[in-house]
Image (cartoon, rainbow, N blue to C red; front, top):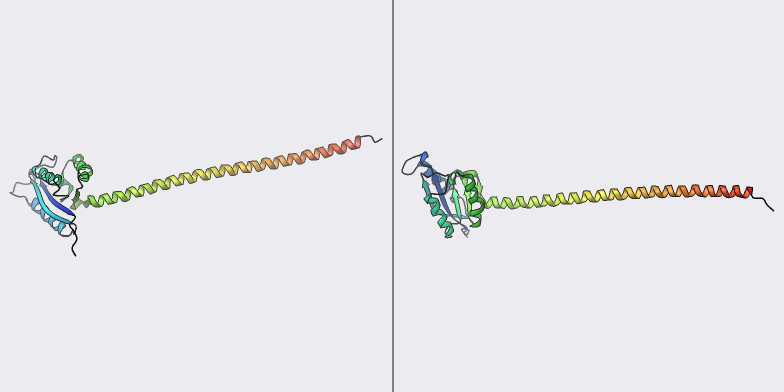
Length: 196
């Protein structure tokens, strides 16, 4: 029984013109070999093509191979992009972040940068774990706060109860003292009262 191929991948290879002027640079060949070897070890990925921008800067996305790759993605022919590393994808951090965090997720495209150990499928799963952990941490912090508040209220109630008992005891003592004074006054009054 074979596994169903889930991802139709395209290898994206790039090297700027400053890095060499051969017909096809060694770096491009090395990127291709690295990606092909990687895909051979992945049961859920099938390499369906490659796009190459040999001699193009990674500072912007105005590259013919990149634009052709994006057309294949928009046409639904590709749902995974594999690069050697993020620097082969782009050198503009802000723009590459827009693709990795907004455009590719919106288009349901998996992105893999082999040498950076980045796989958006795993990064998304890790983000979900991190979000769940944050929710748990927040809930625990809220519960701890509520528990602290309840403990404070209990301590306040105990203090009031203790104060009440002290007042009760003080009142009881005052009552006893008053009774003693009343009894003394009655005795004194009965001794000083003439008998007929």
